[in-house]
Amino acid sequence: MINLDKLYDYKPSFHFFAQQLMYPEKLDFHPTLLEQSFDLNDPTYSYVQTYWDQMHQYTMDEIKEIYTKTFDFQKDCALYMTYFKFEDAKERGQMLAKLKILYEMFGLQMPDEELPDYLPLMCEFLYAAEWKGDPHAAENFKMLIMVLEDGTFHLLKALEKLESPYFHLVKALRETLKDCVEQEVHQ
Image 1: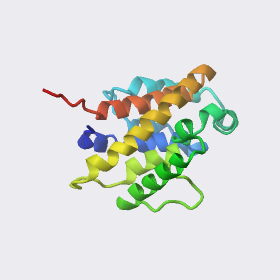
Image 2: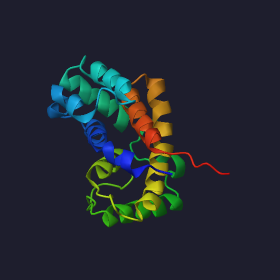
Image 3: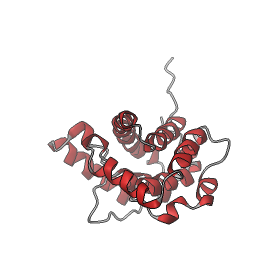
Image 4: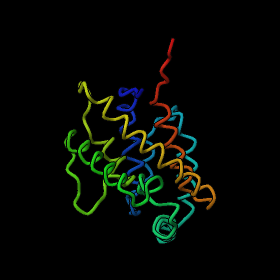
């Protein structure tokens, strides 16, 4: 079960994740961005701080090169969260359609040039969507969270092998999601 209130509290974090997982721009590394996105007491802060510190050791050109080498040229580091499980199977098309419907239900217009399982888009949706008070949100978000957890699991393993700074960012994203999932207790 997803704690939607906790998920809502992490909106600034999801915006940060979305920005950092898109092609890098200079403003994405503004010194105040980390402070605006995370509280020092956030359980994922150490991962994000490690990522932030590592990225700030590089020039902007080097960051762009790392991003391209990682996400554009490493098949195992695809930012498309259903790709790892379904590749190009029919089930992937069905999952993409469900994600698109979910986004539209909560007011997000999908960019024509992007697939709905693109990790930065998924994070941006969690930042921008308004679900408070929606009685169907918990059930609808369950699928989204499952896709994120499954896709980022594979991505995290690939990033770890590459010793990529993005490992720490994806680890923080996964820990944020984990913090929002409540275990159901059966008697």
